[in-house]
Every structure is written in structure tokens, then in C-alpha cells.
Length: 200
Image 1 (spheres, rainbow, N blue to C red):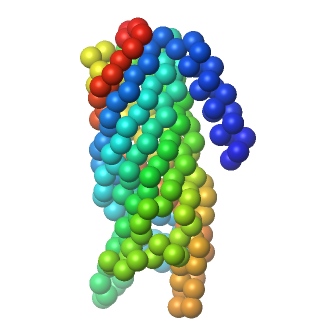
Image 2: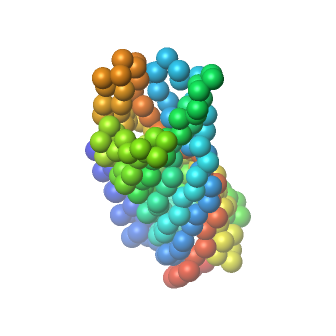
Image 3: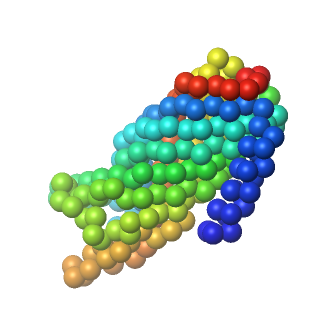
């Protein structure tokens, strides 16, 4: 993970040096979140719909850009039991993706990069489970987007959780939970509120 972070910081510094465009903006949209777990009931986990909202900066060269972001993100899942009430888990994170954008034509781009998450709250059916989850998360962001010339951008991204966030879920209950990893699909709309340099 450290090697990935260092590599992206190096690319970011290089892109900043040769950047043709610099922009700061806001973005947000819906989340479709779930968890990947080794629990015996894994097939009964269904996605939770939430939202993400935050800000980004873009350092763009001719074909490559780096876009660090700061996003509040609602995540979690719904566990369905036959004949029993659903268990709805709600996780909130402050996420910091650092995305490499590879531009093709007309602002269309492919995206990849690490995402670092910091847990702010977690509950299951309105009862706090924050102490049973690790406070940090690491994901790989994969996606595609379109930067339009008048400042609007749209993105579709999958955040693939790589780290186990379980820090004691199910202990003492006899439940076999095992690893828990976040999985989140995101659709975003963004707006560049400040733009400097070339805006091709």
C-alpha cells in the first residue's frame, strides 16, 4: 500500500509540474454500497443506497491528469433474514481518492488510483458498531468519466475494498463473520468552480 501511495505521489508531482490546467471543484452523487464477507450468510447481503459529496482538485496535462478528492461517503449493506427483520448497516467515511485520469478523446477518460478511508460513524439498526470496525480503509478506485469543456464532469466509479475492516464484528455471538471489505459503486456529477491555465 505504501508503494502504491508513493508511486501516485510521484506521478502527481510530475503531472503538477507539466500541468496545462488546474481546477478546483465540487462533486457528488449516489452510492450503491455492499460488503464482501466470509460470513455464512454472505449471499443474503444486499446493497445500500447512500450518497457521496465533497471537493476535488485537478492537475491536467495533455493526456494525463491527477485528481485528489475529499469525499464524505455513506456505505454499508442490508442483511436479510428469513422471517426476521432486516439488519441495516450504515457506515460513514471520509474518503481521499487520488485518481490518475488517462484522457482519450473529447475529455473522455479512464480512472484508476488508491483511496484512503477514515471511518466517522457506523451503526447496525441504529445501534453503534463503530468499535467493532477498523478506523481506516484502503480501496482501489476504478472508473471512467467525461470532462466537458464548460466545467461539468460526470464519473462512474467502482471502489474495490482491499483491506479487512472487521475489528471484532460477531465476537461473543458465535457468528462466523471473518473478513469484511467495502464495495461501492458511485455515479458522480462535478462542477469546476475555479479553473486556471488552458481549459481545452
